[in-house]
Length: 303
Image (cartoon, rainbow, N blue to C red; front, side):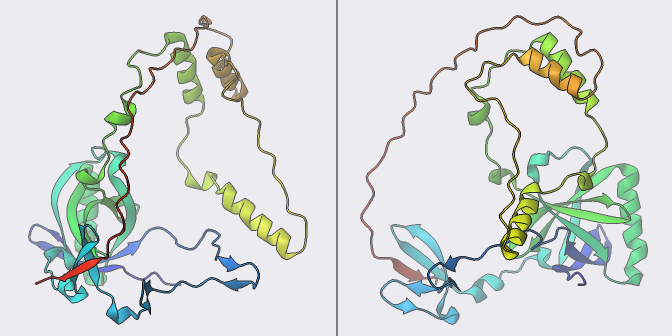
């Protein structure tokens, strides 16, 4: 099936505008999907839009509601939202350029392919692609896509351009509360040496095709077995040490290095075992507030 563009418009670089199309870079529906089935009847479970005390409602009766708290909503017509004028609905302007590796992976969301809309746009498209590649830069801009304005990054990808939507700064959680309990002490030098050797031994160029979705593969095997009336196959997983086991970290690292074919697995000075340091117990307690009784929703029409 031919790919369908999710956005059409202009890619703008200063005074240069290039007609482009944007296509999703990932596949949908590849993984096994299930429907909820009513066991006694074997029929699929349907979902209907209902209102308490009224019952089923039609789609043309549904508005968007912004919660004001206390079960009160400000009602907004979909047409009022569509009337918001944003230049980024039809124009994707690259307003800044950053180093290729300057954006933290934390900010990347979804990938898309950018392609020229016609043959006449190809020359200018190639100029932008090659200029980004030569400068080793990533372009930054904003684009309205699927009902919201996204921050986006553009960089060369093979013969074309790859666009990736980014999270805004206020969408990223602060990691400090999660990392604050991790001690700042440096790792043991001997342990670090063996761990680094293990990483070096297992370092190779990235090839996504080398990895498969084992869960999806097992689900398909289960479905095929049940379809043909066979007993489902069971895959035994490797035994892993329990949390209660006392693990000699140095020995475990050396065994891992030896298993991967690393040289010098027996070299180095074995670090003395240290009793596991107990972490300080968290003393914070959540204040639980009694739930408020359900109030009848109140809707106020936007003026």
